[in-house]
Length: 167
Image 1 (cartoon, rainbow, N blue to C red):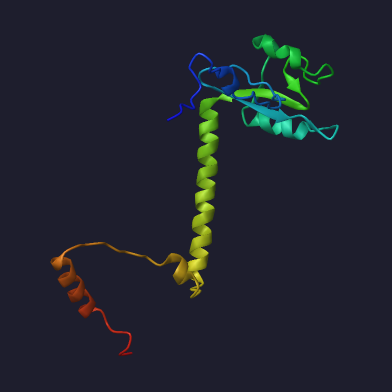
Image 2: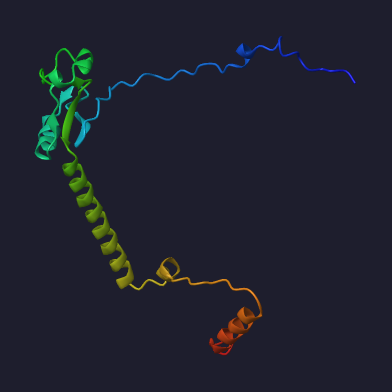
């Protein structure tokens, strides 16, 4: 039987190396995370028009512009004609920071708002007594049992249910 294998000395693993993949670079740099702080890019302009209303609303929510001196590695990427010269602005976006507690409180607020809205919609739908809702909100209970005892219990339960054919 002929041996068709390549001798180990002749095998070259260089041919088996995967080609490198390319991905576009991230336009917005990621700052080094700090414990207890959350970062976010806030829009300062869109389409060449200043968006001071958005910036002031975010500042009232607790977001503060990050000082460029705190992140010297990001200063290289800052816009030269920025309206926030002491901060980090890239392409109309301003890097801001807030304590984690603010982010948790905001998320909880919106989670409660969503829950309240869902309960209001569901209660309004249930109040209208639309027969189509019975398929959406019916309660399905099922269980699986095996053996002769399960068959006897199932037969007894079915005997207690009113028959649809009698009505």
